[in-house]
Each structure stands twice: as structure tokens, then as C-alpha cells.
Image (cartoon, rainbow, N blue to C red; front, side, top):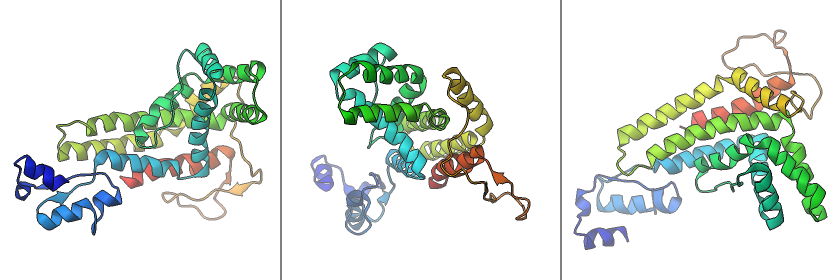
Length: 276
């Protein structure tokens, strides 16, 4: 198809010095993919994967880096599904919040900022909307269970912290993604923006104290206890990080905050940084 279009347009494939597609096997495959077929016709047509699609895969990997992050994005999507399933519920949501929910995008991971930002910005009103549909709508037992579950989840400090973190992360990804999608972007600008994004995520990783303080203010305003949920209440020694030099006796007991920071926050941020 590509070679046919080039021929019909009077463009010689011999003049091609580069090709770029998404990371799908049908396009990027080294044996049977489009890039392989083009390289057979012209070995000088160096393949470069689509930066935006690669960024999408980085985000997807981060969302799957630990169960808590997967649950977080799952609840964002379930919130949309719950209210969009009924015109009555949708009207209640818009009346309470003054905005609309967004579905999580599967193909444009960076576009998830729209879905997460609404929840982060209007969380108190969203809780009111959930309470309203529980009190006034004729819900099925399944819908009632879902509404209660989502209300309980978003009324936890863990959820507030994750909202605070991911709004910043996703906004950085979306800002860079818009640049990468420009029609006149060059490889050097592309590389510079990917590098800058990596540095931005690293900066967010280093801002744990300020992120925690910001989330604490939100939680206090909503009368949510500023404490992390821990299923395992037993005292455990936390793992020693690579840049720490401690003997077994020096390693402190792992607090609920430590567990969240090391096992969720750092894991997700490191998954993004290491994939660049």
C-alpha cells in the first residue's frame, strides 16, 4: 500500500531515508512488519518508532506497575461507567459538579489527564453526587454496591494522594505529547522533549513531601483521615533502597507512609523513568 501510494505520487522509495510507525508488530516487526518490507526495498530507510505511541506504552506499563495503581485507574473508569449508564445519574453529576466525566482513553494514554483532572478538581462534589444517587435514584443492587464502593474508595487518603500525584504526572506527559505530535517536529526536538519529560517525572519523584502536604490539605478539607490504609497491620522492616547503606539492625520498621511511598509511588515513577 505504501509503495503503491509513493509510486502514484511520483515519489521514489530510493530517496527515503527514514520511516516511522507505531510499535504494533504488523508495522514495526523486524521479519514481517512494514518496516522490514521497506528495508528490503531500501536498506537506507532507517526505522524510528512513533514517539507518541511509545509514550503511550510507557504510561500503560506504569499503570500496571502495581495493583494499587491499576485499581486507581479502574475506579476512575468505573466512576464514568456508573454515571453514564443512566441519563438521570448523568444529570445529577452535572448539577453537582458543573462538568462532565471522561472515559479513560486506551489508545491515548496521555489523554487520561482529562479523566483524572475532573475527579481531582471536583472530588467533594463527586462524593455528593454519589450520595445523591444512592439516596434518590432507583438503583439496582449491583449499581448500589458500585456507588458505595466508589464512594468509600475516593474517601480514602490513598486515593487523594494518587489523584494528586497522577494529575501532575499526566499533565507533564500530555504537554510533551502535544509537542511530539506536531507535524514539523524533528528527531532532535523529539529526543530533547523525551529527555525533558524524563527529568520532569524524576522531579515529581523527588517531591514526595510537597505532594503529601498538598494531598493532606485536600483530605482535611473533606474530613478524610490523613492516614494511609494498610491491609497488613503487622510491623515489617522496609526494604533498603539502592542508595542507602544500612545493616539489618539499622533498617527501620516500615510505616504506612513508607509502604505507600516505596511500594506504590516509587514503583510507578520508576516504571515511567526506566522505560524512556
